[in-house]
Image (tube, rainbow, N blue to C red; front, side, top):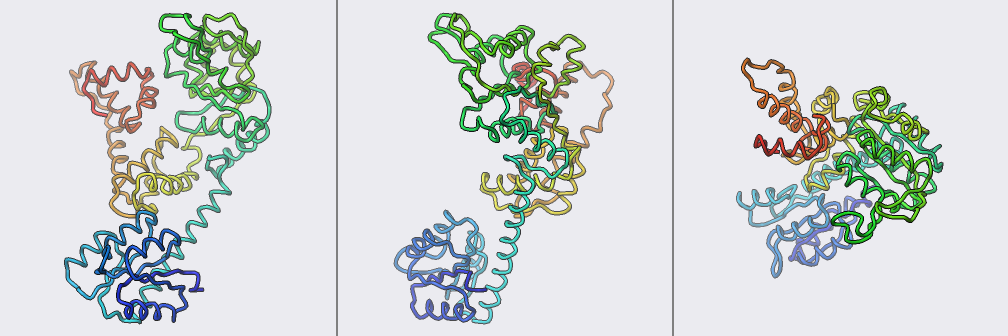
Length: 452
């Protein structure tokens, strides 16, 4: 039914305004009129219209282009037709350049207008249907912000639902970028602790002494610089959930401290004598093979068994390639808005390129790649050329030959550059790839003068 589509006709000449509105009403559209640009903007603020016919020159007040730009501030996808009796190439180019879908010259041909609106409505109908289907698919394939249709991930969704309200510790294992924190947050939000704090700590990003004070807090005067009492993350979690990310990287001393907390369910602030109950649920995550670390003595086996009461292993993106189209659609919908770019979809060729890529950085790497493509894209559709950086990185990865006489420092510089390229400049991921901490990586970047 055409009546569901709303059209606004904007013209300061009453005869033109009413005749154009009458033609459109004959096609059963819902049509309203405005006598000035300012009136049109006020009406559009209250009711978004599907199509706007706006006269280019209106007096007094703002002209047609200015009216369109004001409307676009609140309705970015507004379809605007600029109408004028003063047709010139310059004004036509200006109108299209500023974002008008069409440029029409008075007197307007009713049949031409009718056919044009039919084309617009057909496109908008397809767009609405596409949005509806995406939302429907997202509901079927999402679980607390995690999007997947793979059987392995849906088995994890079921397990999360079963254990969400329990107190047992959870160990989430998976490669970097697979979404371990998303799973941890899903466990928290799906259970009876959802109204209580979720406190996350990155164990790899802090030195031992800093991580200790971050976890347990400290009393005034406990060490130089401790000017007052500070609550730690265990205390801040207060009955909710504490998420210990990259647990495999903590020192032997902190492993012992954490084991004691899990066993006794209480702890002391650094320099304190007051025993504090630990009421938070512990969820830990790691991208390391803790079983192998136990064999080499790097990770305590008693701590592992305390953490590994409920084990969740997240598959890599390579193991669930069927999720790539879903994830890409989701990223486009969100990132196009965040970056204020008009990208709406991805071409079949570009999607095939993404499907064929190995994605060592998993979902995070895919998201970074889509964002980079959106930022540099020139059209509404992401094409293969928008992902040239993936092909370039792949070509670099295949060059394993090292010229004779290459110095150790040159090899180190190449390794740092390759890790930064692979992670798209993400320091945390690049440091993980290289097996060093962030401060070491920052020092190498500065040493070799590597641009990020």
